[in-house]
Length: 196
Image (cartoon, rainbow, N blue to C red; front, side, top):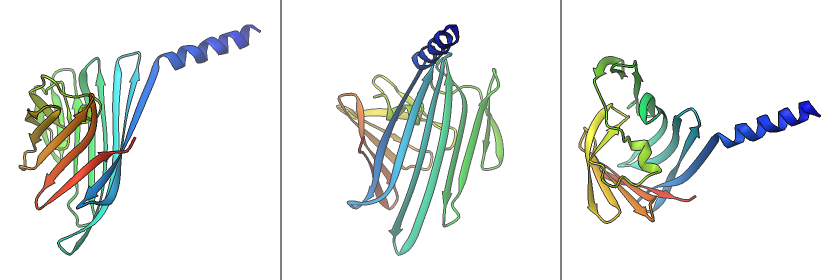
């Protein structure tokens, strides 16, 4: 009986310290579905906050058949980014990756095989935008290329930032939940629309 009670307490204790939320999106181009995106946020009682995103899409753009896969994993501890891994693979060979690690002093960055260092980053990153409306936030960290961008509240519940290559991303919220992301990648507009 003591073993059963200890096992029961252990199971209850473990389920109380763990929370996870997943959101699914359709990716559309000119009204047609071209792919899927899923993002998960996991919280633990030791202060770890982990975001995992995966997406895949396939479309014909200007007579060229393109397919892509994206994978992100971003980890925060007590609100501080401690690691980020991003990978983008495209059938046309436009592949990128970026790894970021906090070494308790600075951020070591390895982007497409090149190393650099960042002294600091904003507390908000792109993956957090999927779960929280960025009210009163003025900078966002773009994990894809380890850059910081200004984020603007352009109208009620709508926020915009531009990537380092000039592409505009627009985040649309309703009642604090992200409903749609408009990704302007010249010459097309991809809409990422919440389905769950």
